[in-house]
Image 1 (cartoon, one colour):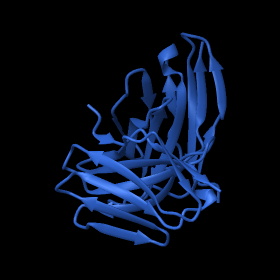
Image 2: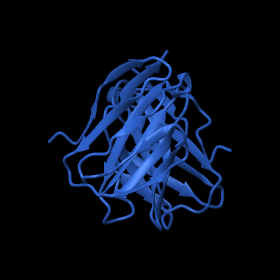
Image 3: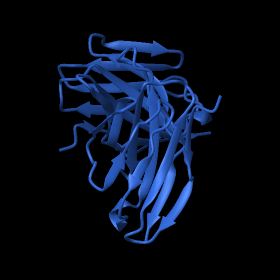
Image 4: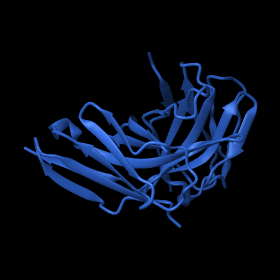
Length: 114
Length: 114
């Protein structure tokens, strides 16, 4: 049971480059979300999706795009990377049938923007 | 303005003793608080939650207490074990109305001393 899988685990980009962080879950969870964690900070919500075809902005959405074409996948796109986007990115998913269903997190993607 | 505050960046406790991790919040509009545990280079894992209509929830060695009048909650770990050494995040969940996501505190690094 893989759970939530994030790829790549590490990535170094130059300022202005674009890339897509991949996230896949095999638990048939309706809800998926992306967070970033900066040093000494808690996780902050970037974007989330409550189902295929439905996405919305979280607390820190600027500079990121998402799409949800399938239940399983929720990629995060950086259109033009900036040094301020250097962070660890976590993808999460959860069941949608009850409000208190906990989120399951992937192991993260460490992204450095030079 | 930080909505979830964990004012102790680190806490050192002797093995076998009680660990108490504290969390304060400012927003009274929540459904659940959730505690997550995080090891280095891994994603957060769900530990225990508490509903806004309860003041205590227990699961094995872990107990969470909620004091709504003081806007304070605490996580008790008894007895503390070496494997409990990790960063603990307090978070509250926003659900419903198409919204989804967690608001996290900055975390408390718990160190269990042998």
